[in-house]
Length: 426
Image (cartoon, rainbow, N blue to C red; front, side):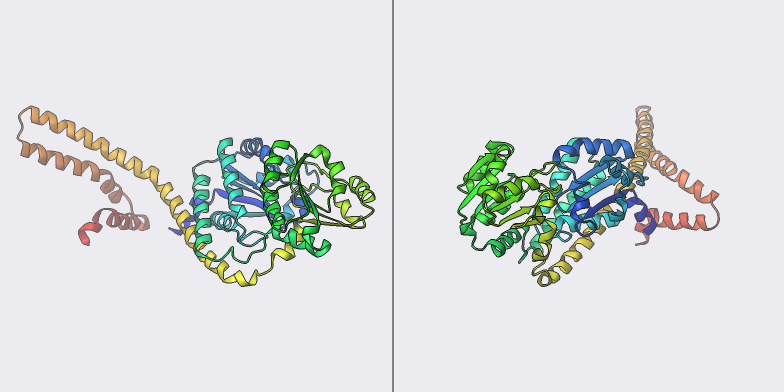
């Protein structure tokens, strides 16, 4: 039974890297944005002959979930898709198989594998990844079931444990860093670049401290205005960054741009305009929105998602008990998933068995009807029907038992007792 269960999970695999296995400079090279995901999923499925595929790509991780009988080509595909050349990404990747995939997915969606332990945003990101895979046509029954259970587990962990309590989010960490460098936030002018979920979260934290000014810079002005109105701020387009940056003390950026939006030259000019008044720049994007060289400039304090790591670890020890409770929930639900896989494996056999029995039933029933029309007694017809069904159902099993010898025969005898004789003995 154990080996059968192991076989039923052997086609599910995860390949990925995260904030623990790879630095930001590596993570940003294999990140996908939402616009890239559908064509990437289709190409992944075709190139690697994967029956099912889901790609999860966030600031802190990129993971590929596949159903594939021979997944050795996944790493090579990732290498080629991102044009990495001679750069060997395998040293940063982890590969999980079978039940370990379910355990990992449950941990990820529950926030146990996040930089911010217990952070809730990851669940929405996993749901988005599954939605996109469904749109791409690469979400099959096995991965769909895996992630449906994943969503249920994440909800259970959050409702039954204290995993999210006392956590320090990236948004709160950015606020804390800014305050430690520049002092009172109410004296600062804040420029947010982007208008997505992360910027919305960070802006909410900063707005609560009543900064002197909030500006939202976004590719589309309409989306920027909608967010700016919430915080009584103003909106500008990305084309106005050169003018806006010198006017602000804090720049926080998180867009889906493939290339940096802010370069060293732009900040050098901004510092001159500001007479070298210090600035804090927080880059929450992967790939990065701000060139790393900017951090080398005097009077510039540049932070990335990895730089926020120490702050978001605060109170982690206090939540260790919650982690242990969450792990217990996850372990039980992993077994549920394995059981589902095993049941799914048996379903085709049960279906064929029932079809086979139904063929016998219909055949013998037709004979019985004809016998009744001929005038045969109902009692004789019923007796003949019962005997015929019994003989047809048992002919092949008894013949197989008689023709089998040795250890295999004993296995069949045990199976026969379990399948056919159990009710009579009990």
